[in-house]
Amino acid sequence: MAMQGGTALQEKVSRMLSRKHKKPVLKPNKPLVLKDEVANRKIKKGEATCVTEMSMMMACWKQNNFVDTLCSNEMQSFYTCVEKAQIAVKNKSEQHTIGQSGRLQPKQATILLKRYPNLHVEI
Amino acid sequence: MAASLTGLLKPWTPRVLLVRWSRYNPYYLEPGPRKEVYHIPETELTPEQKEERELKSVRPIKAATNSVTSSVFNDPVLSKFVNMMMKDGDKIIAKGIITQTLENMKRKQVEKYHKAPEGKKAEIECNPYAIFHQALENCKPVIGLTSIQKGGKFYQVPIPLTDNRRRFLAMKWMITECRDNKHRRTLMYEKLSQELLAAFSKEGNVVKRKHELHKMAESNRAYAHYRWW
Image (cartoon, rainbow over the protein chains, first blue to last red):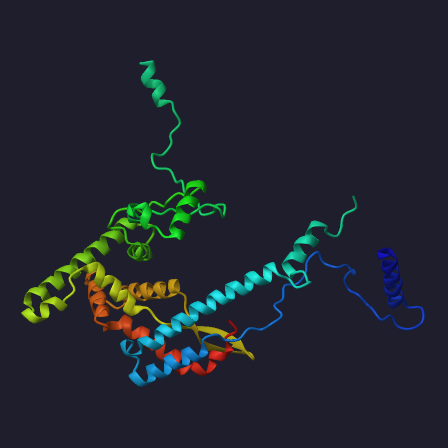
């Protein structure tokens, strides 16, 4: 089944490369070969954490002319927020590596592809 | 005669050999050089500490570095400061400067103590280690700035810093300040003791530098959303 799919694809590619009827659709400058790796990409773009705590602390600083002793409460809450954010990031990355939800992670796909690479030398 | 000559024919090995590497298998545990941990009797251990002890009896442990001892005078923060001050691997000079600094600070504080009136004597801190730690705490910045590129331009964005980074910045500022802004004839330990005492009372150039960083971060607070972590 895979071979039939493979031959159909090769026929389509050769049709696209041929100059028989009209101009060729594909004019490749490199051989049409897939790489042994998958690109790493992060799907979701994260957002800035602890911005509210930071802005509260900065407002306190502005009021008290940057004296640290009077702003200790805000600073403490900022530190706790930062710690929580770091732990959350760690947990999320762990969860992503362990639970893939039906899809392989890019790093895992690369490892598998590297085990069976494309042959570029005749054996 | 033959016996003494065979002794000389052995290949030479240095008396002190490096044992610890930097790359260990992840299941090696860190060494715990502090003695107080082992003085706690069995009954007073929390379950996590008991688990740790059991783990230590089965797992291999990394070799401790030469700079780590189990003595009461071993201070990791001070050791880090000495290493940062060291030039060309000359730890003896760096450690000597720090010892002289601590002695100098103690002398100044004791002089102040004896000259102070009775009511104020209790407030003067004479322990140079406590002064050093408090001064370093006062120099640590809370927020840092980093360059983030957005739309072709680079903006200075305020970011939270890790504890290690904050400690490093405080020490670095202290050392550069003492190296650059001093009179040609003042020695390093003298200038360091002056700066540390000033930082202890929240004055001086290092604390000013920290405040300037905070002011820059505050003025750039609009760009805080350019962060993505």
